[in-house]
Image (cartoon, rainbow, N blue to C red):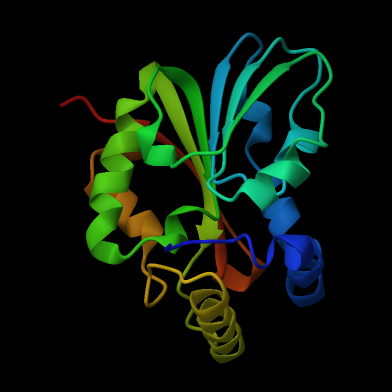
Length: 204
């Protein structure tokens, strides 16, 4: 199975912190404050569930947490979000139905081959309610030699360990803009090798 993170689920958080410190966590927190109370939230490919710790508490959020890896999901289920409701699903994020005010796709889109990004993004776009927003945090192709080498090494590791569908890191931010989204907010981090952004779907 492609994009299978079961093997590395036990060490994923430790490995992330060894390589990137707290930078990945900090990047994912960037636009959490835009989430409004009583929102319906979809989190796709949420991994071990750290993001649940950062969501605003007592906001009456209705959260659907979707993760393909059952071992990753098992770790996520140990997390809580006070004053919010969470439903966990071990399934392909592309099989999700329903409408959401917020869709969060952090370090999820980099798993897909470039030719499949269009399909994935159209699916996510279709899950957004009117005035809904897509929050994405992910890696960005860097011109910095050190960052470029580090990203290549990490991507190669995950391609082998998790059978990543993507053979290389693509320009996710640029692709999102090309596929019917406008940028509401954008921030580059870690010397330009990470980005976090809020997108709104353009009218068809």
